Image 1 (spheres, one colour):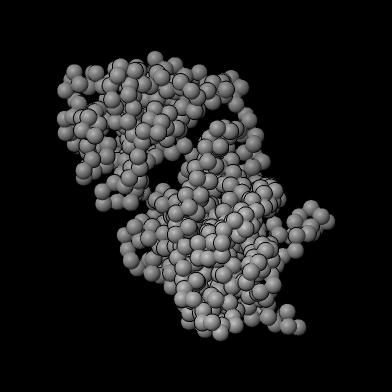
Image 2 (cartoon, rainbow, N blue to C red):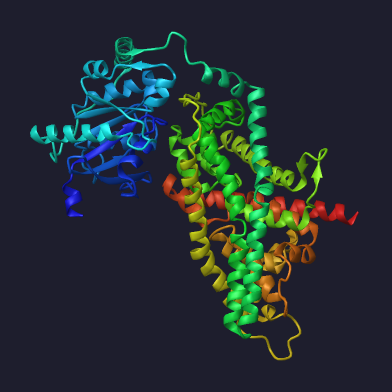
Length: 631
């Protein structure tokens, strides 16, 4: 550790979508860690690598920025670290500026700003393979002479694609140590450039590009032709909604076989344990607690992987930024900034990273509005609840001429309900407590790229691993607790009802039942909502454990969905779906809102408002459904 503290420190700086993080991953591999900067919620990614010359180097991946004139929390961190203003952070010994070689006009202005700091700088022209395919001829030597800094070419996603950068880092560190830069505290006296300086930067960039970059006689038209269709205000939106619709249909159809295999395996394991072990608390814990509880959650892993597969493809292909551009006008109609789309789409995976991604929104009012509606986007933790209820109460049949599955259509409707309610809430917030002038959307559209199978596979592996780790830790612990509360104390000898009715869990559920009876919830649902505050999908495991303990002998011979179909009414099921569309039942989400906004007020407002909204929606759904079913 002490050796790492003495190692030279290199900072990676670059525009968003320049491949900076890919460079970081390529040179550090698994030798990296993530923490937070002192006093702020922005993440700090640091790693260590050994250079070709055998020098141990510390490298820090700074948040993407378009300029040192910071306008968001992420950009402010990059500025302060580079300038030596961040408390507890050493000034980098050298800077590696990672630039997208296909879009140097936008990148080079920041390079000129960094040059004015007087620090050793290496310009890494990343994505050179894409630039060559577009017919761009970049003279690295001429560019180096014009900029007055070392220039190397990289393709970070290829094996060996950063070797030239590693060699140049060695040379730069040697020069820095010779000139006495290394480990010397140095705070730059930089001041924010005015409009005149910015115009000078722009003219200088154009002059440099004219000398060092030659564009093809016939411009690369593939991206432009694709954008003509995909960014069309009508056809583009239709394609976007078709992609989202396909995604939700695939969540059911593609995952059906692996889910059946997991279900069959869990049933066989349960039957084997039941036959191999004597009746007693240990067998009940394993069969009714672990398998019925944790297994009820694990079975939804294939559907979660299908959802993340689509999100990964959208991100890696470059389509995600275009979706934000498409929806800018729609989101502007409710007062949201176009940049809010990416945090909100990220919230379909989990609201926590979605809320953290809102740091890129410069205006604080827009950022707060985006954060407040992020929990309304249907995160993957809701997917097990939705799937369970849909499987229990929605027939598995085709509609609309056999082209669309009814279950997938209902799933799409639930996601759409979350999106539309989020837009409505944003409209109310932005036209009441968070009024302000809406800023235009300015963003870089990355080039289209074919998603690399290795990157997609690694992304799915990480998501699946995180889900299984939570199933094996948080969910497992909660299931054991629920099993214990549902098994003790033992029922009296003259008991005529299932044992769980006399247990601590039964007492808690019955105590909460009157509060939720107006919206159709029974005591089992009331009990499931409590540990569901830790993670929404826990509610499914709790229901599995509760109904396993409620049955006698051949408990849960059928699936949990079949048991619920026999135990609940249709209005109750629809009411629970409405509740989960709105309720912010996740302590991690509330915690990250508290940290991101540095306020206790906004998470309290979020919890109270969305809980009231969930109760109202569930109440209306239950009453209307009861009236229709009754009629």
